[in-house]
Length: 339
Image (cartoon, rainbow, N blue to C red):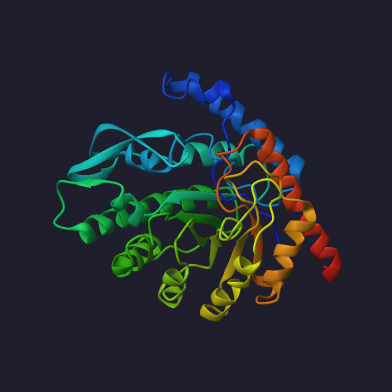
């Protein structure tokens, strides 16, 4: 694998023909619209030059919490809550023992495998975030609920791994998404234990952790030696003062890559170089500057390039432009490095 691969790490804006009916349709009628949107999004990613396309922008899921929760027995949904980008999802209460009713990711992954030969990364919401975003009316405490979610996620990943390896000899990439992980620093032991339990005993997978918008990544960096991940896909473009018109940013955000490199000598870092909360499209030169600042602190062999998070907050047109500029900026750096 080349150094500085470009990767898509999360959700992408759905076409309106899908988003407008996502909660109204079901069964094969909805599946055909999802598959159409998936094909169009994979084609869009190909146009930008991305090397790692994830699962194609998460066309098959409305929201990261509800997607997994809806596939479980033991959860009752009481109403809608608003997410950060003004989307709504159903928040659940755990009222009895949690049990899987099926695999909520395998249909999506299978369709992606049928449409592309590129690397596939399956994002799965992590046990700590599932625990934090659920009401708990059954388990004794937060730790026990997080560990039950970890058990379920471990089963989910094993099924995906086995399905993948029935058709492919390469490792399957699994990205565990944990936006809530560092919100309660005193509970990092619960986060570490439940995350490791989610991956325990599973071979044939590359595991990465995605944490976005932590107030202080040092909370996470201190625990890297205790976590069994191969790498971390993190947010940096929004981690500083950014002018929404010019995209100018204090370079200090990328200087903090040194903190990651000091905490880990062998894990890879997915470097966020696009702010997903503004329409400004970072120029290739700005992207290149951000990558090169990071390279002052970490070897290119350990660096991957991605947006801060999923691009569902932007229009599809802006999202495509941001990804294309990201790839061009990476190409500038590769040329300068001679790789």
